[in-house]
Length: 88
Image (cartoon, rainbow, N blue to C red; front, side, top):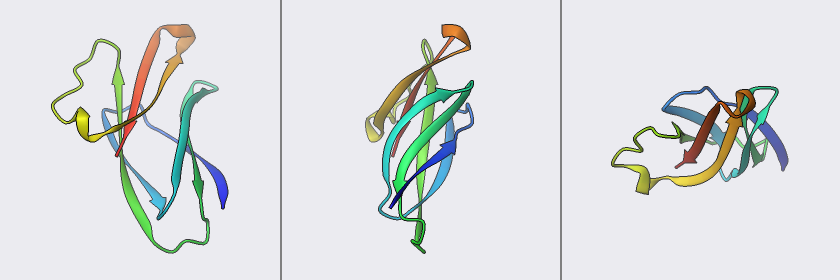
């Protein structure tokens, strides 16, 4: 098992393909890029799709937010942009 980093797009929804049985750890701002860290087995042959939601402060969360797990809040551009990241 290894910890891998995945760069996320700033988008309402995106699909992240991870090895099966991965453990999503955290998100953070690294050099003004939004990155997600996960424990993965790089030798795993089966992959699963995880849906990532990124919602800006003041934006609608929609009706399906209860189906997602909260991952973290990220500040970018010196605090001018605040993103709230969820996954399922």
